[in-house]
Image (tube, rainbow, N blue to C red):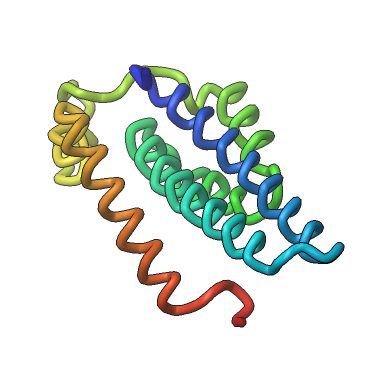
Length: 153
């Protein structure tokens, strides 16, 4: 399904925007009399997808060798409602999403860096990478839930 980084990134960018709609709808529903649990559920869904999008942006950014600033923009775009969509369009049009997963070392000296070798090792084991990402995202999600929602209770 995600044979290329651009497909994975696009999917998570769209999912992140959809969860903004869920969260905003829940906030509006609470404002007109619905139970506050709708915001808890909507916020939980949005938070989980936000973390998945951020992890995806980091993974794709490493694979595509984005400069730090580009990666920061990609991750930070999830903070602004619906901004992941224009960010994905910008990254696509500027060629920053072009190319395949870097599974093999090339003559590029950057391929000899420890984190590039580690990334290639995981990319060659997609089930293990997916499990590690899910475990990391869920662990971070639980930690953030224990800390409390953004803005306090």
